[in-house]
Image 1 (cartoon, helix red, strand yellow):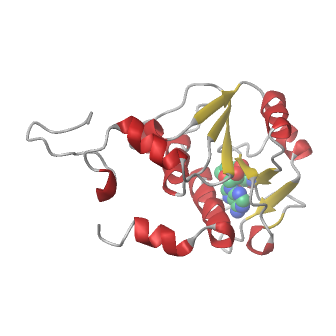
Image 2 (image 1 turned 135 degrees about the vertical axis):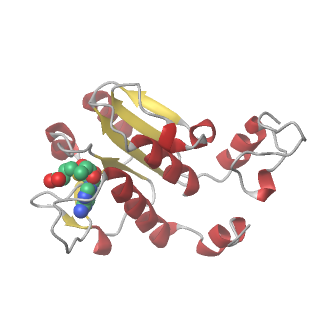
Length: 193
Ligand SMILES: C[S@@+](CC[C@H](N)C(=O)[O-])C[C@H]1O[C@@H](n2cnc3c(N)ncnc32)[C@H](O)[C@@H]1O
């Protein structure tokens, strides 16, 4: 165990099942069950949403999180979940897209742009990479041009967009609703445990 308090209690923010497990054993167990979807986020200006994207990717057991652009990101919002999540850095969009092609993963851009199609009715591929843009600028032109599809989340209010962390949570949960083992997800995290 690596993060115990002096009384020997495991203070890490992990589900009861993992209390007392060494971190590498937890990662190995997660690796045996990871989902085939990946998430990627563009990071040209140190986007503050990345920590929250990593935490949600951990909760929904994404295969990997990909950071496109700057390697450095603010880990605070991840609440230490980054230790249990595979994170890969791609300095450029071209390198990221080349990786996705090698892995035969459809690149699914998520942004509410002209021509985007509704995510609510889109059949998400089981294996894919969901790509999010950053605050203010959104998905880069390069990602828009190379994506196999660009999907928008329905909105009804006055704001142009929601933040990328919220959009990522909705999109990942969209994947879970289509492909996840819902019962297993509720058994692994029983309410209140
Ligand atoms: C704050 S938005 C910025 C761009 C947005 N197109 C705009 O015009 O304001 C940052 C990122 O959050 C995600 N996002 C925000 N709202 C979204 C929506 N309604 N549908 C899909 N993605 C959204 C996208 O990945 C987007 O690139």
